[in-house]
Image (cartoon, rainbow, N blue to C red; front, side, top):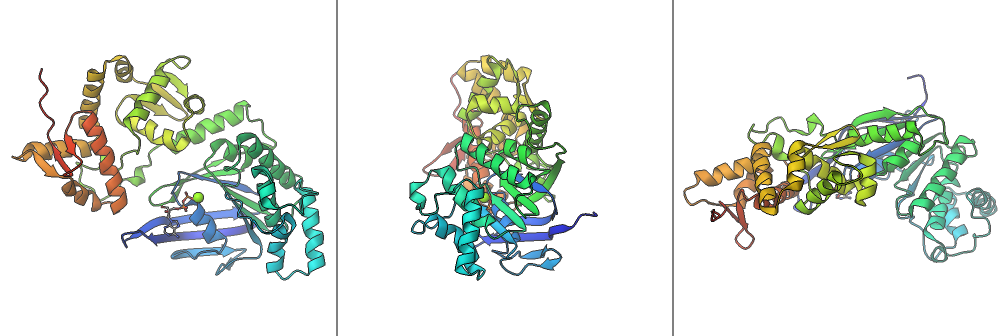
Length: 433
Ligand code: ADP
Ligand code: MG
């Protein structure tokens, strides 16, 4: 790489203590570089460690392992050249807009009249001229975030880290603000040399970034990178942007092979991580997909729009549909399978039967529970037994969630029954027919 590196992370790992006292690895072996002149977008599911990674880069928290450097120097604490913008705006309610913006300069020991001059200039640049005396509560969300951005920019940061800075805003306001930022950047109106935005909005990432990086979950690792060689401003409805959004969608819904733990017994191998979604959502998306205008084949972004569900609800649902053989996800498209079509057209009892069958053939954990119950003379086992098994391969809270999904799905498919009071699993009662 000939380019000047601004930030460099090598083998970064970070764990936190969970409520039960066990360590939970949030980030593992993260290698990342931000070079001069680029905007990089970091995408990942909620909880994948995006904010943690940003806080490590900003020097707000230390990494447990690995190297973190800014312009070739190790980072030990907050760095003057790195500024951050937060989703929550993080403004002090009792300070005026002007005072909030000057805060960053005060910390750097800049003299009062110089502070005022620079704050004025930046407020003007970001579209807040005349609002210096206002209090945050007098401002709309979009204006508040302008203050958040102004406070970061007033320090003339070398690097700007934006943590979901536009996601608390309504769509139009977010877009406007994002475009204003890009105008400052592309027009060289700010001295900032590199921007890293964290987002869970794929379109935002594709519209802004030169590179999109996808972080996997549990632990967070950099999974793939998509380079975007399109001039800005970009046309959100243009073919290139739509194709890239499709591609990134596809990459995000793909299950990475490395998420399978190597030591796992083959019976549980693939089923150990069940997508966290419920039956209502699975069937809702299936119905939507089968219906007009899709007729069994949809572009993921379009389906997302139609469903009015968030990506975080949709991704696990797509994964479940794929896992159960009801739909097929390929890159940015989703297609109903023949079985999925039968499913949609089936009556309630048939639906549950298909669901149960698919569960037994495609979800090893469900099959394992069923087989264990059949082998058990009493036909009755405590859930704890399966929880313990899962905990050999994943952390306790995760094991609990996986088992919850397996139980919900299994009950629906009548593969087994579950008693909430006793926490015991049993073979389902024989139906009359
Ligand atoms: P993201 O920004 O991708 O949603 P975060 O970096 O905020 O993810 O969090 C990743 C995981 O780390 C979450 O499970 C979160 O609960 C956990 N976590 C983050 N900060 C702390 C902390 N200070 N103490 C304990 N757990 C934390
Ligand atoms: Mg976050």
